[in-house]
Amino acid sequence: MVRTAGAGTSPGVPGGPTLAVVAREAGVSVPTASKVVNGREDVAPETRRRVTEALDRLGYVRRPRFDATKPTRLIDLVVHSLDSSWSGAVLHGVEEAAYDADLDVVVSAALSRTRAGRPQRGWLDKLTARGSAGVLFNLAELTASQYAWLEQHRIPFVMIDPVVEPPPEVVSVGAANWQGGVTATQHLLELGHERIAVIAGPRRRMCSSARVAGYRSALASAGIAYRSEYLHHGDFDESVARRRMDELLALPMPPTAVFVCSDRMALGVYQALTERGLRVPCDVSVVGFDDLPESRWTTPALTTVRQPLGEMAATALRLLVRMMDGEHPEGTRTELSTRLVPRASTAPPPG
Image 1 (cartoon, rainbow, N blue to C red):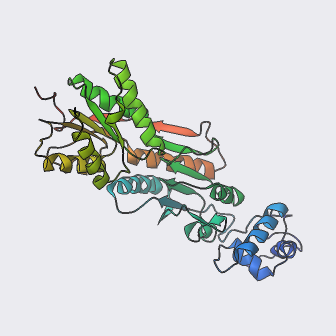
Image 2 (image 1 turned 60 degrees about the horizontal axis):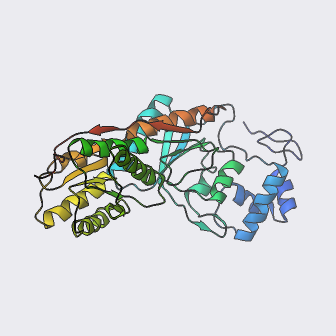
Image 3 (image 1 turned 90 degrees about the vertical axis):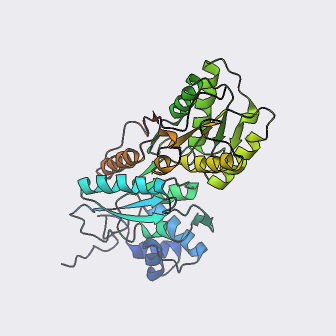
């Protein structure tokens, strides 16, 4: 059945402005205004800006491409990358929760850069075009204009392990990273280590700074002075972690144990130690973070802090479903607990 809207009203919202009114307000043609509303890329930046401002001023709400009497069953999952077991664990958690909720999921890689003051062309402009009811962002860093874009289009979203601290009103799910840092360091302290180094992720990453803070808190509680030369930052890449471990081994008093803030970086630490003829854990104990499959496959198997990636993803999806139903969670930050998984890479310090 074809439905028509009354003159001057939006076909999607009774009493709202039509696209023709928006086009007249912005000084463009109706087809051009339609391209902006539907996420088309062949629109000049200045024209897009004028149309977007007119949409905001007039309170235009885009007509959905689906039957308005039926809730849409499509959401987007925007991940940092698709080439890691980290992303695989998140995908698995979303997949299971989406099945339970009878949702379809579109997966795409994150694009956080902007062009001409608006979200870069790609997935973001296509969200409304395909009728997505909500978005999960995993390890994505959104700009102020992207947050505004989502708000303008009234698309609910949840952040999974955000890169930096999101605005206070944004709903996010993460792990108890500070407690994980405490747990990893306490484990090494209990084995008798005092010269404990840490190889962290990027300084500005929220999870990395929390893990380092937990490490420092555990040292302080044990009465052991923090040594700045024992703190090195990487970028969650194994080749950089290998170089950072080389730098630690070159110190006059190298550490007997190292807390590495990701399992992937721990692989680089293993490589650096092997190249020096050192053994794990006989010469140096190593603790990782994440509990990815790689942590069990290494030799020796890696002691690590497990963060529940699948559970984090599933929790985020369930929160998103509530928001799609018009609810808003009482708290905007949900943290799931971490726990130590002891394996064969830690032992008392050498005699």
